[in-house]
Image (cartoon, rainbow, N blue to C red; front, side, top):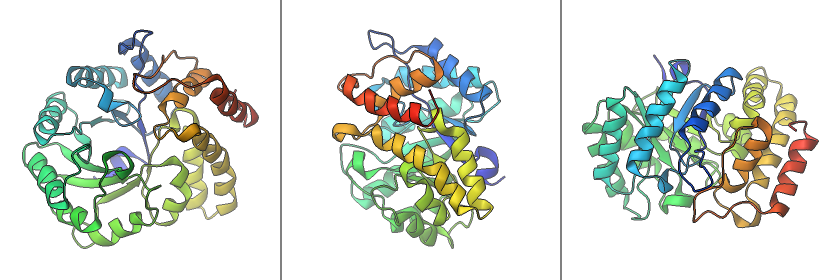
Length: 305
């Protein structure tokens, strides 16, 4: 079965709810998953991705969130585990924990903080792939990890049987989606290339991105699905019309130089869904009243509130 047939076009990285003391709220997590599945806002669920604040969670919290997601999803949507860590050893351990729970696909971010060379990146993912039978989707997000996975490196990794695709944070280098396609087409024609940046949805669809990893899908899942459909049917005007509200909302979550949208995304999702998600974990500062005025006014204007 090809990647897109199993996991779909919309892969949703779940926000991680906290209580007022920044403890993970697993009950709210299950409630959020139920809401997303009942409203069919995505095709697959990603646990502890960037939107889930993976770097702020402990190893045990990440495993428990995987367990919670599997139980809540109950086979209705595929569950993908975000298992990337700063070190190769911990990445392998977390990926094995996900595999032991029955998760078949792991989304693994390029090691952060250390800024490895391309050879270091290759060896990291090669050792990971050889240590597990789980399928691996590479995750390239240079804005956070400090290094870019070059197309040549991705081509080398695509030759490893259980490395099956890549999520690219396309806002950094919008044309790299095409580079990844060109680099891997002769190595593995089925290698999946997904865009990981909501505001780059239209530009990367044109380049052939097979889907979107979207935090915005918590609110805009139906619109994203309709954008893919409109583009597939050649109705570019409709695709653009549907894209503009998503674009405006996502841009608003980056106010005041915020690179991670979570601080504003959390209360926005709360406002739309009614599910209590709590504040972000420090060092992420919560959204200000002024920031929320901007974002909530956009949601009201486009009929989400």
